[in-house]
Image (spheres, each protein chain N blue to C red):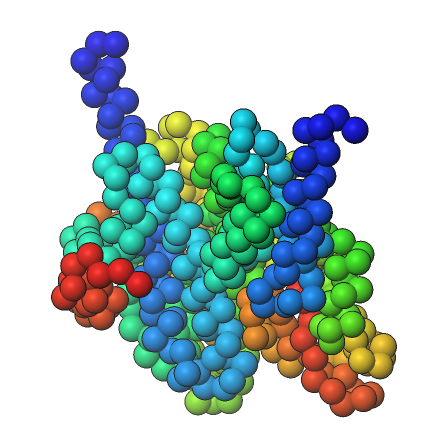
Length: 176
Length: 262
């Protein structure tokens, strides 16, 4: 392997150990918010994208990335915030989704707000029409008889559901 | 470059800056208003929804302000733009500064705003200004579920009890005159349209009226006249008396202790 790509792979590896501050079982790499890693001279440039524009965890995530890389001896780290293409739950890895389920959070089932058609001229209420009539499986008993309690949950990225079989309430990581 | 060409370039940059501040100020003031309901929502789920929407709007504010501050090039920060401008310098529309009132007032204000916001963001995704387009792309996902939610609630309130119906109708009638300002384009809006950076007013207004008509029909509410007389002035800094009170609370700390840091 070329030395610089080895160095980049090493950084990805380290970032794979930086956990999301609000869901500490999923790494920021599995969450899909690390867009790129580059070395520019002696400086390591990490490009990240926000899940939700008001996500209050972004500052903590940026600090965690710096702390992790400094801890591995990288002296100079720069964070770049990239908005486009906007993050979607499709960017989440399968390992990440499995970790969420193990933690008691139902992973995203399908992309509900899909804006990819807009550039092709799809307009009007297109996005409004594809309302959330989706089935979310209970992360505890796998029942598909579940019910939405609230569109909004404990963090911007989650909705509140309850299982009609095991009667447990649970968080659902919303499609986005 | 000739002096005339330079002046024209400056004027366009100035218009773009104003346009960005309008977007940012709308999001900030509505976010502040919704934040005031934190812990006071009519039900736990509504409380969480209001604060989540407020948070989304605050995130969007930061994106608009970051771009505006960069374009302005005077070294002002996002915080400076939020906390150190008085009412006359704020460019939000009158709709967002209207009081929270009862829950029908809060949700009707939100529904009118979300409907306009949704169609504007949808159009801005294809703006030829790449920064505008990427902010719109990020915002649109959030604005889409904001609008689904506020539309649902208007239907529930309108087609609910006799009391909720009456309150929803009263809210619609009272707020309607603040729902036209966004479609009356001035030099700033027209400059952005000419650049190909922003959409024209007519198709936006048509989409707005169509969606409001659909939701109102389902909500059994009477839609006020499309050609009713409309208030204006907010986006040029001429505000209702409410904005001063909102800013007094929001900006208190930076005014009382200039330069205070977290």
